[in-house]
Length: 101
Length: 217
Figure (cartoon, rainbow over the protein chains, first blue to last red):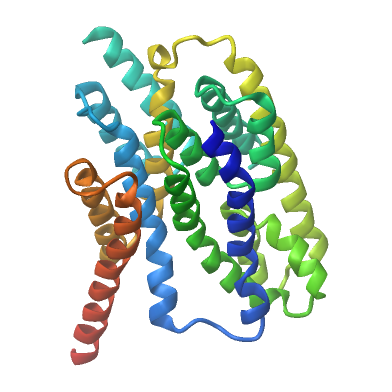
């Protein structure tokens, strides 16, 4: 918890600066297409990595309910394109599978 | 959007409570950090006992996307005073961006509308975090209800609908594969740094190759 307490104000500054930094710089200019494309791809990699990391906690391997739940989440997200729906469906399916298996 | 924010913010509060994070810190993260992905990831990393370096690396990597939001919103704020830009930047979440960028590109983004969206979402997010943290005290075993699965489901729900082209999928899949290797090859949360830097590079290479092929006919 001490780590989080120390990190909190720094995370706040990092988050704010990341939002603000380019506004004064680019109010009149734009990023080059390659740099812009590179930055736009970063969230995909980071979010996918976070999904996997939380699916398989360190020292463990994902069991069938988690793998099925992840598959359902991908399908629901792809078809429904709704974050809340994706979370609700995936959580319910995973909980039910854990109870049954 | 405010209702969805409240629901997701409540889940954040529940998970933070289950992670043993005190209410004031749950609320402080919403007040000062105000970034859903960063807050969810911070709770996840805290639960797994990650280091300060891992938390800050995560915050940096997740926040990189804000450069794009700020960078693309910047031209639409060119007529705004510097201090107003500085204030508005704080509320530039993915959702606020999504709700306002189309109007901005159409040249129809009154400052009041932008500020109204940001204030509404901010209030909703903060109220939800407290509500979830308080309600979360009732739940003793989150895995029983699958609540621990909110994290991967949330990140999947954020990333999958955004994947439109092959480079997007490449970056996401490579990021996922690199994350899988973390236990054997990378210390701590180094996988986030590697995934965040190499995944997009692969996507960019495919983008360039597609561009060349299209150019050559």
